[in-house]
Amino acid sequence: MKIREIRIAGLRGATPRGGWTMELRPDSSLHTLVSVHTDDGRVGLGSVFTHEALVRGAIEVLSELIVGREFTSPPAMTEELHQHTFWMGRGGSITHAISGINIALWDLAGQAWNAPVSRLIGGDYRDRVRPYASLLMDEPGLMRDNLLALSAQGFTAFKIGWGRFGRDDSGTDELLVRTAREAIGPGALLAVDAGGSDGYWHNGVRWALDTARMLADHDVAWFEEALNPDDIDGFVRLSDASPVPISGGETLTRRQTFSPYVDRGAFDIVQPDVTKVGGIDELMAVGRRSEDAGVKLVPHGWNTAVGLAADLHIAAALRFTDLVEYCTGSAYIDDLTVGGWTLDSDGQLAVPSAAGLGVEWDADALEQYTGGVDLLTP
Image (cartoon, rainbow, N blue to C red; front, side, top):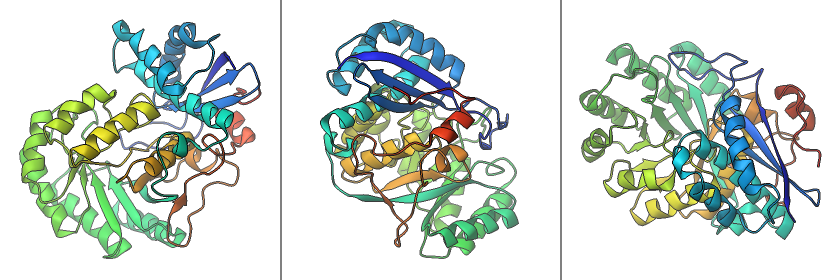
C-alpha cells in the first residue's frame, strides 16, 4: 500500500485551562490531529502537541518526503523524515509534526498486520495500566472537591500541578499539598507538578530542595518540573539531594536531547510526551535507554485521546512503565472515542487489544472540535 494523503485539523472549542501565566482559552490551538491515508482505504490517526499553523507548515515540507511512497515500516519511514529535515531545526515544529505522523503510521501498521501497536513495538508486559488523574491546583476547597469526585470515579493515583504552586509562598504550597493528601487518603499515589516550563519561571535549586522536603512529609511520589527545563545542572544537583524522586522532560524532543539528562542522572523519572518527542519510536528509544540507566519512564499525557491510546500501548511495551497520565476535564480526552474510557474495578485502563491503536473514534466529536474537518473518511 502507498501513502496517498495527509490531513490535519486543530482541536478548538474545548481547550482546557493549562495553568499557564498566559492562560489558554477554549478556542486556543494547542493540539492538532494528523490522519495518514493509504491508497487501499486505510486511515491512521496521530496527534501533535502544538499549534495547527505550525503543524500545517511542517506537513507541507514533510508531505514531499512521504506522500506517494510505498508503506514499509514506521521506524524506517519516520527516520527518513528526521534525516532529511535536519537543517530545518531539530526538535522544533518539524519534530512535533513528525510525532503525529509516526503515531498514525503505527496505527496503519497495526491495521495492515492485524495486531495492536503494543505487540508490534515489543509488548506485552501488561494488558492494563494505572492512570493517574491529572488536574490543576485550584483554590484548596475546589481542588478537594475535584479530587473527591475523581476518587469516586475509581482513580487511585493523582497529580496536582501548576496554578499558584511555587508562585505565592511556601505556606500556600504546603496547604495545597496537604489538602490533596487529606482528600485522597494515605493509600493513594500523589505526585506534584510545579510547572517549571511556564513562562518566566523563577524558582531555583534552593527553592526546589526546600519544597521537596515538604513534599516528602506528605508522601509525594515524585516532584515534577521543579526547575526550568533547560537547567540540566540544577536538575542533577536537585536529584542528588532530594528526598523525593525528581521528574521532568515533557518539553524535550528527540532521543538525543534526552541522553545527557539520563546519563547525568538529572531525572529519577523521565516524562517525554509522545505527541511532541518525535512519536512512538523516539519515546521507546528514550524509554529503553532510561531503563538501562535505572530511570523510570512515565509518559507526559496532557494532550488528547490519541496520545492516551499511544501511551497505553507504550506502557505495555516498556518493562517499568506502569502509569499513564489522564488529563481530567478535557473533552479532547473524554469525548473523542466512542464510549469513552472506562476504569476497571482496580482503577486501571485496559490496553486496547484491537488492531492499530485499537480505538474507535467518534466522528461527530471530531467534526465538532475540528470545525467540520473530515479526518477519517478514506
